[in-house]
Every structure is written in C-alpha cells, then in structure tokens.
Image (cartoon, rainbow, N blue to C red; front, side, top):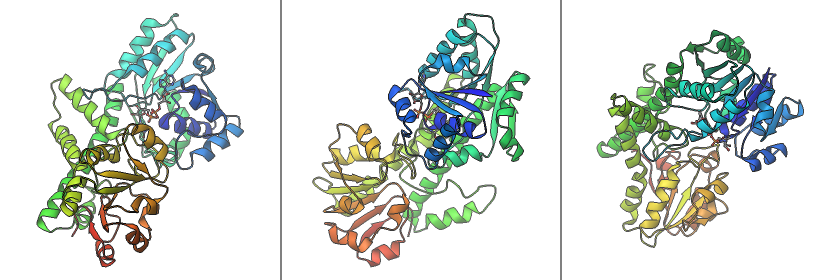
Length: 435
Ligand code: NAD
C-alpha cells in the first residue's frame, strides 16, 4: 500500500513514520521546503521523544520518503492523508484555508480512484465540504471517497500514542474506502485496539468532544484548587479522592497555570463557535475557556502576594513549552504570563530544556533574558516560577538555588515540590491549591 501524507508537522510526521513502520510505503509532503530539506538530512524539525529513531529506521528501510512534490506523491498513492494545520481564527472558528488549498490541489491532480483521509481536526461538516470541493473542481470523472480519521496522539508521547492508540475512529460512507483504511490499521486491529466505525459527522465530533471534555476536567480541577486555597483543603488529595472513582478517572485532574498547546484551546473555541452557528450553545465550554483565561493570571496574583508591586522585580520562569517532552510553545502559559509581567515593569529571565529556540521565535519583540540553565535562570531573581513540569526541574539542587536568588521565593504552578521540604530550606513557597 502506498500512502501520501500532506503536512509533515507533529501529526503528519508521526503518522507517516508510524504507517511506514506498519510496512507501508509513505510519501510525506510539505510545502515548507526548509522542513523537507531538514528531514531529507535526517533532522527532525521539532522535539518528540522516539521520533528520530522511528524516522531513521523507516527511511533506511526505503519505506519513508520526504518531498515537496505533491503531484508525484499522490499519483503513486491510493490513500492520501490530510494532516495540515487548522489554526484558530480571531472569532474562535477553525481557519480552514490550509485544508481548502490542499483540496483544490488534489482536485487538479487526481486522475484515478483515491481515498482522501482527513486526520486534521476539522469542524463537523468539513469532510463533506472537502469532498464537494474536490468533486466539483476535479478535471476527470474518477471517483474519490472521503474518510474522517481524527488523530488523538499527544505531543510528548506522540509515537507511543500512534503505535498504541486507545481507539481508531473511522468515519465514512463508502464501505470500500472504510475497508481500505481498516486494512492500513490492521496491525492495531490485531492488537485489539477498539475501532469505531461511524459516519463522517460523528467521527468529526468525537475529536472535538474528547478535547472539550479534557479541557473541562482541567478547568474543573483548577477551580477546585482555587477554592482549596480559600478553605484550607488540599487539592492533591481531593484529586486523588475523586479520581479513584472510575466514573471520574484520575487523569487530567492536575491543577496548573491553565491549559495551552495547539489543540485544547483552539478545539474548545471551535466547538463553541460550531454550536453558536446552529443555535446549540455550549454554555459549559464558554465557562471552561473563561476559567482558563483567569487561571493563567493566578501566577501574577501569587507573585504580588509575596512581592507586592512587581515593578523592577526580577522573575525567573522555568518551563516554556505548554507541557513537558515537547518543544511546542503554541498557546503555552508562559506566552500569556510573561507579557503581563513585563507590563507590570518586572524583568523576566527564562529557561526551558528544549523549547528555547521555538519560544524565542514566538516571543519575538519581548524583552526577555534567556538563561543557560535553571541555576542561571534563578540567579539574582526575586522569585522563581515553575510553569512546566520537566523532569529536570523535579531534582534541582534547591539549596544551591537559594544561594543565587536575591529573594528565595518559589511559585510552583505544577505542584512538583513538597511544600514542607522547600519551606524547611528557607524558601517562601506556594504551590496551587495545597496546604
Ligand atoms: P503543524 O502546524 O505542526 O503541521 C502542519 C504542516 O502542514 C506544516 O508543516 C505546514 O507546512 C504543512 N502544510 C500546510 N499547508 C500545506 C499544503 N498546502 N501542502 C503541504 N503541506 C502543508 O500542525 P499539527 O500540530 O501537526 O496539526 C495538524 C492537524 O492535526 C491540526 O488540525 C491539529 O488540530 C490536529 N491535531 C494535532 C495534534 C497535536 O498534538 N499537534 C493532535 C491531534 C490532532
């Protein structure tokens, strides 16, 4: 089976390498020449554990290819996966311009039967729209089938998630095309991964409903954490106590500085927008976003509680990626918090184990000092804020840290330190929702 993947970002590259590992011949296409050149030279354009090895293995086995030539790749493939970005528009709706561009290019190229599979997260109804776009613009009368196959991988564990997913969702109308996609995922089927076969709209909505539910869990526990601080309860124990109930589940019950990343914020906003369009408002999700926006500013409140006016105070920030094990800084809490600190007149130093380069690009124009390591980041600061729970931050030498700080204050927005231990070392310390 020959496959084309359009869009070689987090989803496209992991899916391409994963499908090649299943034994298929995969052509990964991107319009970003620099990205394709890097990949041809064995350089992975972003940090994702295990991906480099998987890519190298499959390139060496002559199953994985990188190109900017869409036509050649598509002509050689029966199945074409669309993995381009669907970023948010200012009104919260999904920007489908990359999808539209791909659909129109495919219409130009296709001259024999193809199965077009949408892996990008797209609003309900988009797959039908893509099929209509291709059908009404293609040059020949050949048939094209469309399949919705949303992706659930998580950055930081994307390879593992692709190889061992919780489920595979396949939405479509053509039983022939569904059978082809099931065949592609046969190694997972044999490993007893649940397959959900449904119509296009249901498959599209499963993706949004999943992310909306996860975001709801995070905003819920963040509000519980804020309440804990007022009433003397401990959120860590509350989360444990409720998560043990199988109807609730223990995952996604960690309070923090608000959710970020390239998926949760944009997908929740898009679903809200989709609901409004058909007069079926998502009032709960509107609150989820509002709670999240407020949560990002809790760090500022906590710093002001200890330091008063932040003007001319130096604040160190540990963790710039939106979560550990990724270099992705899209909608990371750091990107929301740092501009507020700067506005208040604070000086800001930052450090992240892998996301420094991406953060520099995203924070262009902001007057920030980039530190070489955590100790350097803490040096001469009035307070140190932990935003991302990278493992290397869990084992910092706190006594050494205290020596270099101007004022020994730690605001731990991920609750990775034991409050009594940190305080016993002479720090002022505050986590989130903890005693
Ligand atoms: P990304 O921005 O990392 O990658 C998208 C790629 O598509 C880029 O390399 C871009 O150059 C390329 N591209 C855009 N237009 C193109 C065109 N016309 N031809 C060829 N290439 C083109 O995006 P991503 O994070 O991989 O996300 C892709 C989609 O998958 C989005 O809809 C996203 O919501 C969804 N998704 C992402 C994740 C995640 O964790 N990142 C997880 C599940 C689903």
